[in-house]
Length: 424
Image (cartoon, rainbow, N blue to C red; front, side, top):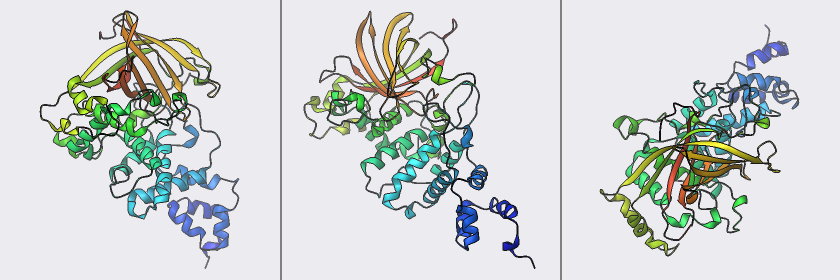
């Protein structure tokens, strides 16, 4: 009787491709022949490529980086091993060792970020990676587990993944929303050290070197999202709410004919944008912050529990256009974009878009009236370049005085500029 070992290599490979990757790893441990077949030549990745492509993931050959470039050399084996390791943790969080958690979170962020671009803004072309990660996170406590002591790195990674994912059932709880408001409206979180935006405070004063503070961005996302998604029995109980600040909107929108390395407006600035922002009564803001007199005194967070507390949500439309570009030697092909904007034909926005040291896309702009800058805003493109998710950030005054108001904003592209664009 013929044995499995008697089969030709080609037939064995076809059998292996029918197995789950975990079973393939176990098979390789049974004898030297199978180990050599699975792990033999690290340069020959055809078996791992075919095994990867049989999983419910995007084809890595069609995927782009968050800054809009095709993935370069692909290690199919490594990528599949990372994902299967993350899958093991997502299905049983208790098996994850503390030293593994950051690697798992980074794997999921890479899966969400390295995806095929959408070729037209009006076309629904959902990433398979997004479908898989969303489904896995819905049934996992990874991004909200409360029994772990989080390292600073893990806290940042978890907040970033949570921002990409969107809202969870816990986000609809009053105490969760109050905590995000408490962070967003704490004046002590806005200083020259972080350019009064959602960036890390490293004490150097060099904001051009600051990386994104995803805990801050996550809080802004929560505050803004709760004005977009209605609080109903259905949304509160849903494991995933599909809305314009959730995972499917993080994909890049890059037309097939466009080479971003040759496109001056690589960030997609030109167009009509909706700018939504929140604010609270200035007197209540000062009371909550103890007049911003100290960074150590407890804040009066009970203000957010008051049934009479009001958070105002407003939206305006603004038309943006590129004024020019400046080469960025640290990011060839992604120059700084200087732009201007108008509201009802009057110039009100002036700003720039640039890539940060941690390869995020930063937006800075001032706005005002009659050429005078009154408000200053700092934000981060969430997801990939030109994503429909848009920019989340914070606003304050251009003077940055101690008692000046602060608040969150969401800027997203509503369409191209046409004669029939809706009035602001």
